[in-house]
Image (cartoon, rainbow, N blue to C red; front, side, top):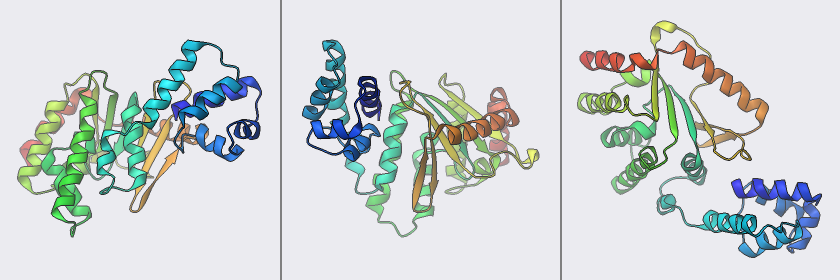
Length: 274
């Protein structure tokens, strides 16, 4: 996506049409459009040909974009789990890895990046009770692997607002539930993690459409992306006017939810009730 956005910027700056760019690399205008949207892979030769066609003479800039091409074509760590999760979810994992800020509103479960292994297993089995045990364990391993981005050298900021129902629902039984709440209590002090609770007592609130995630990226060329999952797929929204509506809802939720400073106290109280 980043490489495609930069190629689009360079093409438009050079006054080149998509059709002309496509013809230059023995392709079509629609192929250029898919490249610029990050929906197809990139051949290094095509990128270097386009950079020359667009008049990019700065050797440092050319090398940066060629290196970005190599990175875009590299096999990500989560590719080995392609057989147990659908393609639309692999897109999400890639965006999650690239994000600088991830804001989540969750209704039913503790978000995957904060789940314990036992809780994750219970959630996966709840959604697919007849799943082969080996596949269950591979899905759990993928979820645990995703969590490493929160402890890497330059982690994203992860801001979660959870409905009280997600915290009180005893997934996997009492012991698993207790372990999950204790895990959240441990995470409260992490500098890159913010956890808020949307309490029952608040009543109705802004997020009547259900759970969603907003991801922001460090590159200014990339738009924010809203992710919403449903039973057989997911929606990815990047139109600015639509993203703004979700961002406004997230802001209202963060104001209506309990203060992050009170989260540990709230979770400790819930622990006593289990």
